Length: 114
Length: 224
Image 1 (cartoon, rainbow over the protein chains, first blue to last red):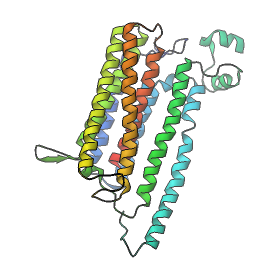
Image 2 (cartoon, each protein chain N blue to C red; image 1 turned 120 degrees about the vertical axis):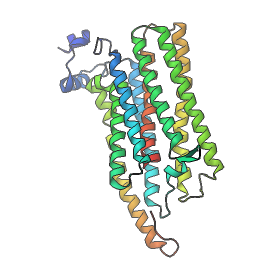
Image 3 (tube, chains in turn green, orange; image 1 turned 60 degrees about the vertical axis):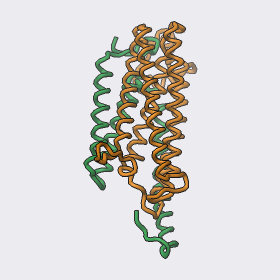
Image 4 (cartoon, each protein chain N blue to C red; image 1 turned 30 degrees about the horizontal axis):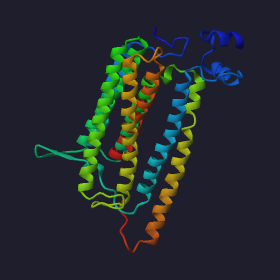
């Protein structure tokens, strides 16, 4: 039994879980290594995001069984969070605007260091 | 076609055809245990809650003109005279991943009908979760001792404290609830309350979500 049974049960070989478990450990170690090695700038951010997405993807797909669910459920759950990307984009723009406004308005009081 | 599909779920179309069939068949949309569908919908709403916290944190961090305290230094621990960056956070991360693994095994053992292994693995998951909360309490006490408050801290941007306490506090609350939730289900599994093990998978979804949120907190709050 390596796939969903007729009642929607999720039964898979144990090896799948052990592999994902090991991978999660490896990716976490890599994320931590990014900080430990004190990488900075775009390299740091890209690596953090890559390991984060890999870990999140494996957890949702395998541990939470999303990879074996029917598309009706996958779309209902994984679709709506895409809207968050819009919020992130808006808040990045808004945050930059606020930052610039603060620098311009309060320039005399504080030196802008970010 | 749809009648036979309903009577024999094995013959349901897959992929996009199945997606269209499920949503347009004028019957139950999700071919899963109702509790699982509801848990997923709860987790979806929780995703938005945590996203709002993290986006709010991102916004204050972008817009502040004061230097943001460096998490790698703030959360460093001194071991044998050497300052190791983010040590406690790394340990907490590994504990949560370990607990996610034991939970996945518990779900698997449940569907194999192994009552005892399921209950014990869930108990192990709950204990790992409890140790995570313990470490978080230690971390909070340490930071409060260092002078971190929701309205200020000794190192820089005042919003650091509010973002930290709100995000990790809400996550820690989720872990604590999860520990209680898992302990109850583990006890009931052990007592033989269930003939179906969907409850274990549903509890597992919640627990994996808690781990999932930590992945994002770890990346955005501690590492960024």
